[in-house]
Length: 172
Image (cartoon, rainbow, N blue to C red; front, side, top):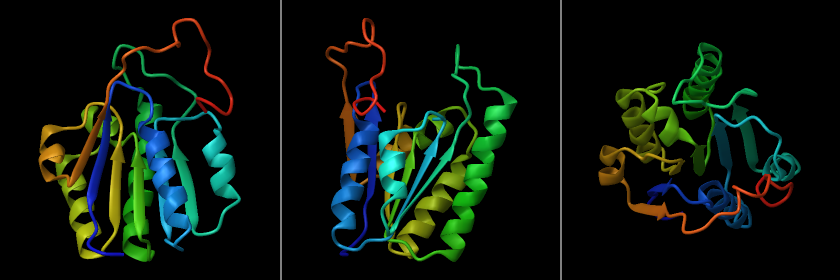
């Protein structure tokens, strides 16, 4: 791969994770080694099932069956997220990878579960090791946006969630 980039997918609209998944599918066709770490999510998804059957991609989830209500994250949820952050630094220390997706990491940063120093260290390591880095989730921090090579903001114009439950194979 040529020079790696920092990509951010953020905003209120649907499609941030799906865009990261699409990039991974494309990259797998060129034998890239990918780690896809998902934070805050707990439901088994179609991408999780698919990725588990493919080579060159490792998918790990760090979330519990618990929604964030009124911006309150429980200690139990924080603990599993911190476990994921520790896992991430171990991967960066020990594995050879081409692409790293940190799904919902923007929210993890927004809720101050990961520090600015840790985020900057991740970016520094990825640059040094030539790892393409994709950060997804709402509320991308302005400092990350300044550092990014690509930022896409997803804007909700209309959504059917108010009248429809999440559908297997479409939303998860």
